[in-house]
Length: 373
Ligand SMILES: Nc1ncnc2c1ncn2[C@@H]1O[C@H](COP(=O)(O)OP(=O)(O)OP(=O)(O)O)[C@@H](O)[C@H]1O
Image (tube, helix red, strand yellow):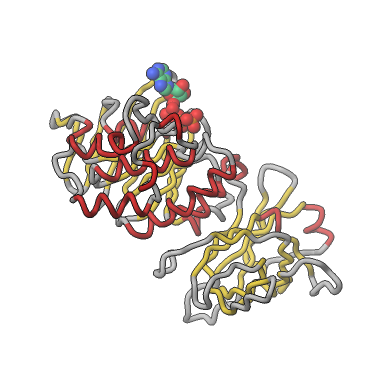
């Protein structure tokens, strides 16, 4: 399954030119400031808006091609769309809402596959309820189910968690992870929340002022400091794949391994060998010339300075190599630190120097595909 998009569209004051493709299943985050054109792009993919120029191809099928006068109706595109507000039909039961798109789909899921989706989303007990008796998180799960039951070839999620409080977000995130890992669907996920992107996304497309500014794997993109003010918006940091190496239920910590380094995090309750994602914000990494004694931070890692770059403020972005690589092997994974220029000068930091990264806080996300993404 894949999607290729290259469209131009003028809407209000915005001159949109979006060009990117998604070749693999998994979540691609569409990230950018308010008004940068994210919703316009997914409306164009869904067929809710007709671009002025260009083409949109879903899995080798042109659903829109201005030159060839192709513009498939939304229901012919096999696109699932989940809005910020669930937009369930208030007069229909959960079951009728779920099967609304299914009944109208040219290639609906089989009944047993529908049962699997309903079970996966944990909404089997809600089928007879009306939407007004559901919590925000339950409504979004039903909305996801409604989109999936129509058997889409691609799923569009427009800030599906932004209307939910943190508790409801935490409730629904594992379902999105499971969806990512089991459904083999390309999912385009609009979000302003970098924690969600770091936890869920495999790829990231960054939009600015209607243009595709950058795209790449979430591991690379979150460390990019060259995206101007936008890098500040996504709070530059590092996402690392790590493996659980010990599990002692009596312990209050778990030990993880990444690039030959050991990380200590609050107890995860996960089996040894499980893969997780670590998210470390650049501003949560301090640099020390020597291993500091008597310090509460649990993660003090030997690293080497690979790059020092200025940014628009009075801070510097320091790229640190975790493990030094052996020349022939893969390059070392990197960790990003953001410190004041004054601190860097005081410590006389220079490229090639061996230093210690003192990490104040590591966020561990629950789950990762076994292929390491
Ligand atoms: N119907 C419309 N008429 C005029 N301008 C519009 C219309 N719809 C959207 N726009 C403008 O197009 C631009 C892009 O809007 P869009 O909703 O795609 O941005 P976005 O990146 O999704 O923003 P947000 O993150 O705030 O949802 C905005 O400046 C918006 O005001």
